[in-house]
Image (cartoon, rainbow, N blue to C red; front, side):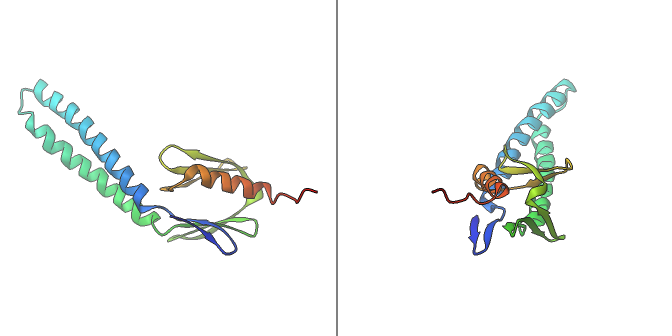
Amino acid sequence: MDRLAPDGLSWVPSRRVFVRRVLLNGALTYLALVVVMSGFLYWMSLPTRWGFVGAAFITLGFFLEDMMRWRRTRDDLWQIHEGMLIHDSEEGRSQVPLSEIHSVTAQIGNRVSITLITGLKIPMRYLSYPKEIADQINRARRGPVGKRK
């Protein structure tokens, strides 16, 4: 869910994007594990039905890890204000001058990757419209466009 703040741009992670990511990753992980575990159990001459149970438990572990990551990022707030990119999270507030940003790119998986001049990469996760957000940050980096006569 993106929103426009009165004094600048701001973005928050989207629950819908997170749920879609978890369901897709969970299904693909489960299917891959079933194939591998069933093949291994068949090769060992053991009942292959245990492959389904084992794959379910391992997939559940990955699901719980994703839930913990969501709990840490769900209240994140990214905003641009007075020439700074500000990130508010449960760990506190961090600020980066827009002039210190080398590049901003939208990545697969509804992420935006911000690369600083120093080489440090900062991810913005679970965004509804990563391409548009990357474009907005890039426009803010370039500064306001002057009026043409």
